[in-house]
Image 1 (cartoon, helix red, strand yellow):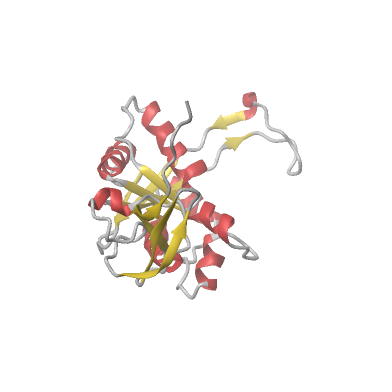
Image 2: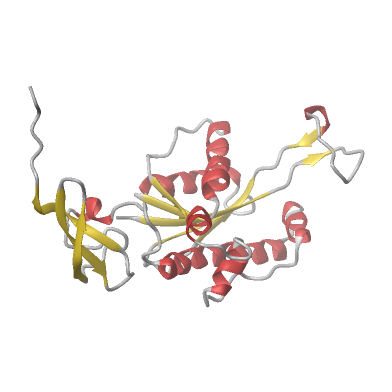
Length: 245
C-alpha cells in the first residue's frame, strides 16, 4: 500500500472590515480569496520530503506535482486534512481546470485523536510533544506568511523548513499511534495476505484468544509491532442459519 503524508499552507483571505470583533464579512468586502501557498509530502518509509510552492515551481507547477502525487497514492494521511487540506487542493484543481486525482483512501489523524483520546489540546504541536515526539518547527509567526506573499526568498526557506517538518511529524505520529487507529484502511486488502496486521501491515501477529459474533467464533490476533487487534475472516466454529419457509 502506497501511503502519502501531506500538508499544505494557505494564504489568508483579504477583506475590508469595520471592526476587529464579531463581524460577519459580506462577499462585497472580500478583496482577495486565499489560496494554497505551498504543499509538502513524503512517502511512507522514504526519507525524501518534497516541497512545492508558489515561489518554486510556481502555482501551476505546484498543482501539477501535487495532483500527480495524490493520484499515485493508495492512502493519504493528514492532520485535519479531511475538512481543510484536501478540499483546498480540490478547489485549486477545479479552478485550474484539472480533472480529479485518482481516488485514494484518507486517514485523518486529527479525527482519530479526537475520537480516541482526550488531550488538553488536539493541536498537532501539543499531541506530538505529549507523546514524546520532537514536535513542530517554530516559525516567526503570521509575518512569515506576509513575507512569503511578498516573495521574500528567506521567508520561503523558512516556510519550506516548517512545511517539511509537519509532514515528517505526521509519519512519526502515525507510527506512535500504532494500534489506536480503528477503522484505518485495511492493509490486508492491499497485500492480499491475511497473516499480516490490517493496520500496519507487519507480519508479526500472535494468537490472543477468540472473537465472537452472534453466528461464529474467530481466531483473534494482536500485532507485536503496533499493538492493533484483529481477527481471522474464517470462522473456527459457528452456527448455520436456515430460512424458515
